[in-house]
Length: 369
Image 1 (cartoon, one colour):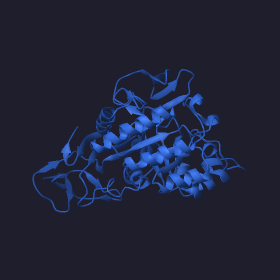
Image 2: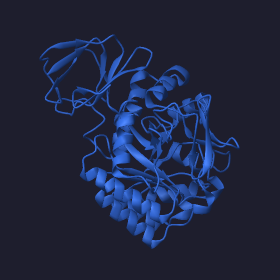
Image 3: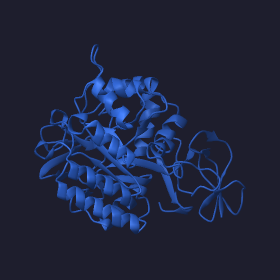
Image 4: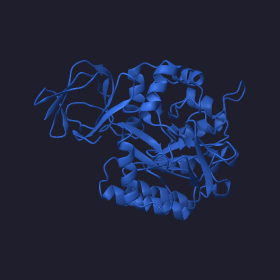
């Protein structure tokens, strides 16, 4: 049992003055045991990242094993994210099945930090492919639908990014009824098509503003539908994918619905300056990850860095930025048991210094870095 003092506590909803007490790996409402004094800043619930394409030198692919997924969880925990959705981008049906099998095994083995999977594609619109391989993008079939529903039954959570052009409203409704978090992305859809998908059960938008139809004066596109509709929206807040001024507008238009994602790649947690993605060379330069033609290919970002950018460059209140990396992604997954530091909650938490740098990470009350 330990009581942590010297830092303000964000409990997932609001900042609290006082201390954080941990007993038997859970948050306690009474100060007990020895005191550990911290050097200012904030204590937050462990950060949650719902779009993690890789880390530790490994990219999620059809060759990924349960051990690889557990390794990625360890890497990202040291970067502040104590819970992640490893993310497979557009690939073959065989690769999708293999990753679901690996994720099922990771869940059975209770890999610390493994929240489930995010399948970003292959049911996208090639007009908004981004760094996805257009040769692998395709409409959803009945076999795909069954595979995803079966995968959701075997996983703690499953998020699927799709385009309304490549999946019918009935397919979206079936996925949502099975408990899949359906997220719209990589799409050139109209406002009407997006609203139809939301009505069918889609509840999220993937990396808002990127790889989607933009807000126009007569056709609001997916951006307009997202900012005026009901879904949660992931946001890559590196100041590169989306201008700070644009993020400021989105925060005003959709209060309470935006959450932060890293969209990081295999280079996360390493010093690598380049790696390959589907046989294509990815360059890591000046905080960017790009294909050789300059196309952005994920982000070179951690959630603590995203929080700092939201506060310092977008003008977001710290407690709002903290929620965007903790309780909001938890709510997107429908997980009330994570993303908070309430009495009785598991004591997964991080310490951010006054400059928003990561000072420490604890899992079940035990310091891991």
